[in-house]
Image (cartoon, rainbow, N blue to C red; front, side, top):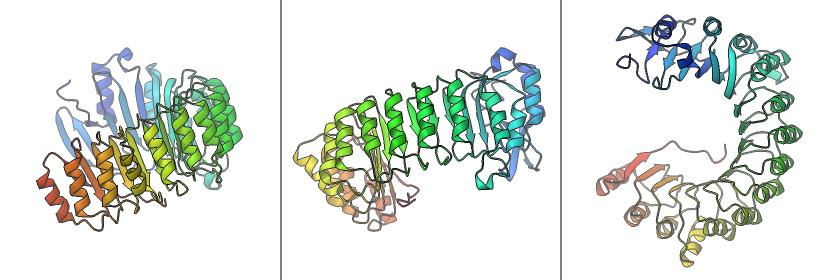
Length: 426
């Protein structure tokens, strides 16, 4: 069997069932991951018979299944169109599903899932909504079906409702049942309010990761996280509704001293980063996007104090980049940054040289839209940063493609590649 199955093997439903029946016993597939999609139409589908792989045209009702990691018997099954037949097949064989991923399912698709057995550790509901939810109203029938699934999963640790019209009231009820939650992703879910977040975090104090990016959560909601989730390690709050008040972030930093990962596009001030540097010595990942109120002192303070920072992303209107790294060099500061991404017009060749001088561990450098960076600056950091092995670039108007080809030849140990460009205003 191992000679046939590969991580990218594709099967029709009949072939898949044949493999299950002929090669596996129920205890081997107790862990099953299902990804369901009823919206994405693909040009073709791979179907396999014995050891021969053939290309067939996909029809609207054709299902696609992909097996992977067969050594641990974990499965991901992607369905295009109704999952009814497969779910019924699973339920008759008493298979318990521990990880579930649903993409763009409507109420009918969610209802189908209730026929299977669950003891979920991870549940992802991406872009799930009723067809009648164009006005983002609550679909109680869909939520009742979802709750019947999650209610049987008291050990649930991860839930993701990105882009879904799943209400904050529903998530509050789920949190009362699934009190062992460790991670919750609310990305672009506009139904969750500060009060909902207060109740969710109060029920689930073990949460260590939370993403409120592009939500209506304000600093008051962050204060709720700070009050209940002292063990928080990862906070993502990109383009959330902070309303120019970063007091909630300060509460997080003072209460959640184990924080390791922080990303924001809020209008943070120097005092906020000072609080981060004073209270979160374990911080390793910082992403600052369009933080225009920062001064050289604010950015320099957190970089010089937090010695464990390995991954640093600076995007948009951060006007102090050259000055910040110059001050760090004057202080003889040595940063632990291994991966640096800069998408800003406020970095020049001088800044690159200073980065090379204070970031001795720099391994990956990504430059996007740095209009004052020239070929000379890129060559300088490639020469000076002894551990540098990757340079990514995009929209460097003063550095031609030919210059990067030349750079690759001059420094064969450094991988040079063109990366997708970010949009600081997104």
